Image (spheres, rainbow, N blue to C red):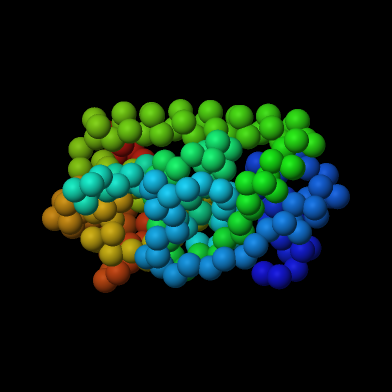
Length: 229
């Protein structure tokens, strides 16, 4: 993606930049850099210096916390049109979480010094940022609380729904997720055995269709009902 016009079109789809007029969008678009990562690549390491904001053009990423003993806790999944890295780019503190590519991803990068210049000249954008930061902090807290009280099958269902929503918001649309059961176990913070058992149960209820290396979600509303059980 080398065209400034193409980058401006991407920015128009990102909630964070919807307060900008056409001229401002083009100014920001000129500052963006393209970067690509293959599936499984680590984009950001927890504790790394902050310094840039990432916008997702294609693919999905996983935001997770890493423990020194090797354990990982997934806190969110983002897809096309989302962004990440906003905390560190504001305060220049070390990255608070790690980010890995769930698919081959195309990102646009906006560096801190450039973002500060943009914010300085647009109060509406500052308001957008404050709203988003508050929403993301609230989501992380609520999601962690919910996971603590979920059974393993419910965690699997919740994660599948989150992954599906990151790609296609329409709950009636069937969607195929390219991921292994081991990857799903990491995302749900449970064991591969529990993932396998849960998927077999979901398949028996015709909620999903499981193949080697992929899970197709057939009934998002049905999975959502499991969370209420």
